[in-house]
Length: 215
Image 1 (cartoon, rainbow, N blue to C red):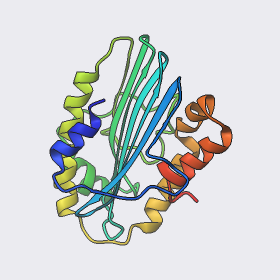
Image 2 (tube, rainbow, N blue to C red; image 1 turned 180 degrees about the horizontal axis):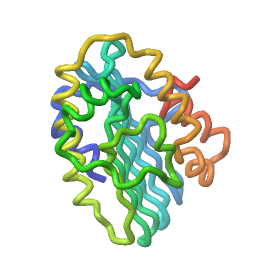
Image 3 (cartoon, rainbow, N blue to C red; image 1 turned 90 degrees about the vertical axis):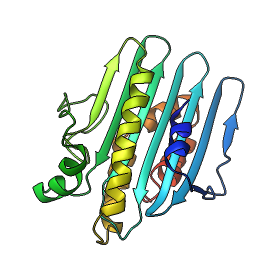
Image 4 (cartoon, rainbow, N blue to C red; image 1 turned 60 degrees about the vertical axis):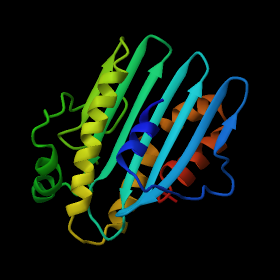
């Protein structure tokens, strides 16, 4: 799992943020392991990473980066999923907090304009009609493309660093809360986690950790 290493390579001053009291950094049994991390750094209030490993069946890394509330910059989101040795899935995006052309020009086209437009407008996994940009990088394959994913992740993270250094000040709390609320009900993580843990834990993990403004 290289997402955490890439994050520390590009962000030099990450400060750990305490997890909720009910959540241990590592939850492990004979068949599964789930690791949860949160950091913050300048201009970024929350950088959360989940690493989920179901032995012999499933591996996933999910990273989401939230700007400080005074900045209306996009939320950075990415994940890579390996289902056994038969299916691989990856996404990277600047999740726009507003749907206007002006917002897209300022935050998406400005920093990702040289990247290809997304190849899909519909997905069985995500609701692409809300909080996904035209520059969403998304790929599914039966061959592992992790090295390609990490290379693209580095490019997007470096562009995101540029974006969050130059973003305009504008209260974004309500927009980030809207993002968390929407993703808490549309992100596939709930179905995956409840398959291996309890429904109660899955909902608490989604609403209390992955998308903690959803509550």
